[in-house]
Length: 200
Image (cartoon, rainbow, N blue to C red; front, side, top):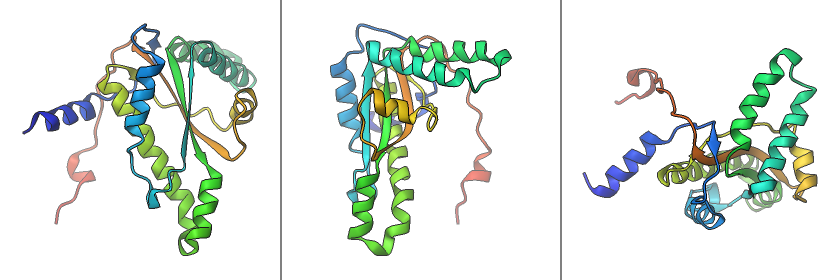
């Protein structure tokens, strides 16, 4: 097995959800830009490249999690809110958050160019987003940066667009807080392989 294959296998196996992250001087804007540029090699159907990314760092990142907390305050039962705040603090204390969007204008354009596949483009868009998210996450993990995928959309969508002046055509799909890992991920359980994979 080649060194490159071993490295890839290690990256795949070691990528885990790290929900408590912290700041680190080594996690710079330049490093995150390099991670994202690498991840943009992830494939998309018809090469439509509908994914859009917004990176929030420092005070802007903290502002996002303050928005999430205040949005949830009126939605989470009072007896559960303290646990919610504690969970959100694990994200807020990180170095930044990557917001993943899908550009609906791109999807509409593709539907016009290939009308026989019109109904499929929204599904393919989300498949492309998932691959982009995974590519970013895998690359962050390979760089020793902890991350997790969160989904506080759609309840925060409008405020996020207003605060950061984001196009209404961009649909928020996921949030990825990242930073220095402040927890050890637990063991991951798997379904029996024979229930998931079939050979004929």
